[in-house]
Length: 325
Image (cartoon, rainbow, N blue to C red; front, side):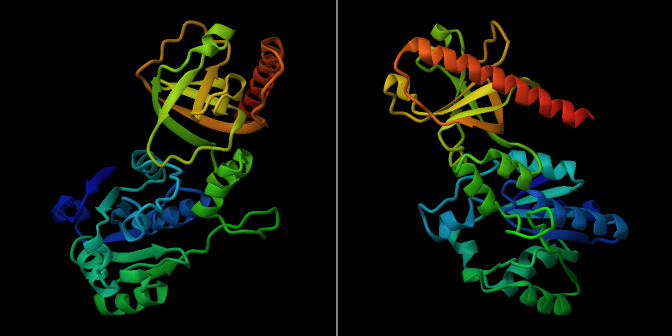
């Protein structure tokens, strides 16, 4: 899959094949959740039918940070992770448009001409029903369809999945996922994402109390604006050098030792002698175990940590077993 940053990075006509066209979908696509997967999957399917490439257009930074500075939402996935997930769905290229104040002022018609017509030669544009674009989000799917009649592209609208056994409930969205993550409902977030929520970063040296207690943890320096689950203890995985290891994960300020800095720490269960300092690692959240607590004694803390680790071990093993069956 090709990755382009800015309109000037788009290659010449050879990429677009003999037909010289493409199928395009546009959006922030933070998290690439199951609703996003449906839209992107449809764009890929149409591209295969037409024998042209499927292109996803997204933005950096998040548009809200430019339009309303300081309002950047917590990110469910950094751009490189989104690109990986899109590649798995069959996308041929991702175009990341630098979102500037000047760019934000483009009217819908100019956005369509500059991006969809002149550069991507769109044959089909696939979007969700709530798609908005252009200055002050003035353009919607009806605008997109009207402009399509002028500039010779088709618009296909894909409804988002909804939660619930009978298809009812709140539609899948990044906003919903951020809410669930912030509440510590990582199981609910996994339902929307179609996979566990991931936090990643470089392992840095902390107070090393976990090592002293017999549970050495990888202390993550997380990426800016990362959506971090609510304070608590979780079951999940710590992935380093491509190896996913069952883990017990702590998020919070470490109240047992009167900490003030909020951290994400992961203990790789049953692994001895790991040296992860300086490595970029990923932590995936499977299940919430309990909230953060301050225990009366260190012995009481150790007893509870042993219970947490055993519970995490069981939950991860059960999940992996279900995945294999």
